[in-house]
Length: 161
Length: 119
Image (cartoon, rainbow over all chains, first blue to last red; front, side, top):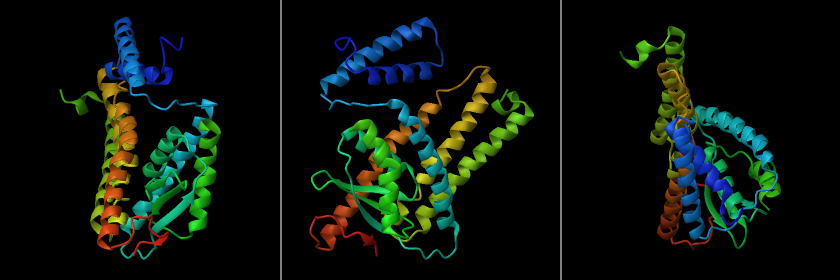
């Protein structure tokens, strides 16, 4: 199994992308998409990516819902900042000590932090394990450290580490 | 026959509202790029366009093309997937370049900036 399908998640994702692009579920599309997915997943393996270990993948669903909720909320918050004629808020950098070390977990955290308007990923120091983010409307550093660690890092730790 | 004529009226209204909402968020994001005061603040604003702006546009596309073609047009959803996966890369590149330039110009060490105010 491992020999023929060394990267099942990658192959599955590629097949899904192919079927979506073609917009059909005809046998020919399964065949061609499957062949492409296997070939590309094999080529992906040649890049020697670090091995991903995703435990309890169903935990992604509540995390995704939470992120969608946060994205909608912060979209409205940032729109408010932009549209207010005289916005005098404070913005700045926040340093967050992280326990998460897995590269895939960190990549997902980067997607979450940058996809949420109002926060951007600035720098991650893998030696000191400190993440630096920039926050547009920064009221209290401690609240942001707590938010990132509790809302996002904890579920990612449980799944990836 | 144009696409909009192929749609029943309720769908045309729905698609119109979704497109306007998406365009509105993208517009506010661009306005923020213009109005906010420094680089680190400005870079926040366009994410409005790449999140809710894109979401409403994609939703409008799915509704319009699914109804017009008579079968689910889900390939547009991939735009959302790839945008979410690739935005962090560009954004990080820009922010790190800005950070590097600031540190060099201010003659600071290349260590992490002090947390807190950006001004």
